[in-house]
Length: 154
Image (cartoon, rainbow, N blue to C red; front, top):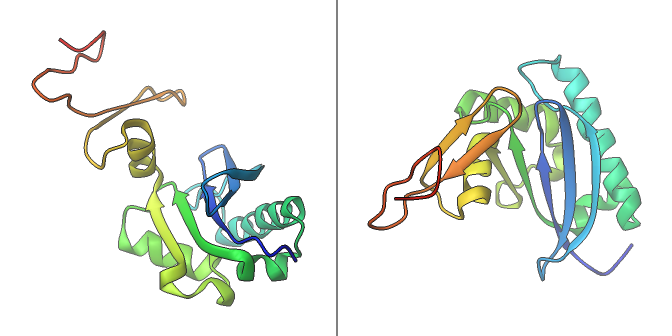
């Protein structure tokens, strides 16, 4: 097992999932892809299997067994479709966070729209626009200027 500890970021995605191991210095160590982890589209047991498969792929890429992955992880963040409600977050906890992930200080569950907003604007406030084709726009207000969806700020 490597001495290095890391963070894990998971994007559950509507059409596919991505897991990324990130060093404590914020360097990307490795990235893997898997099938969608959308609880609103697939049965819960299917999502649980897919999540384990995704983490198993990541464990292999970083050189540890799946059972040892948690001990190398500082914190895991799950960005999941529809995880904006307490009920959906509780369901994600029950189905995905095996006993070794249950320490509430070691995980974070967020809605994928909010995670996209923060990643796209580097802010926790702003506007999200979705085209329905997988294309998304995230923007926040520029001090003293109006945002125009169809061009540059005024």
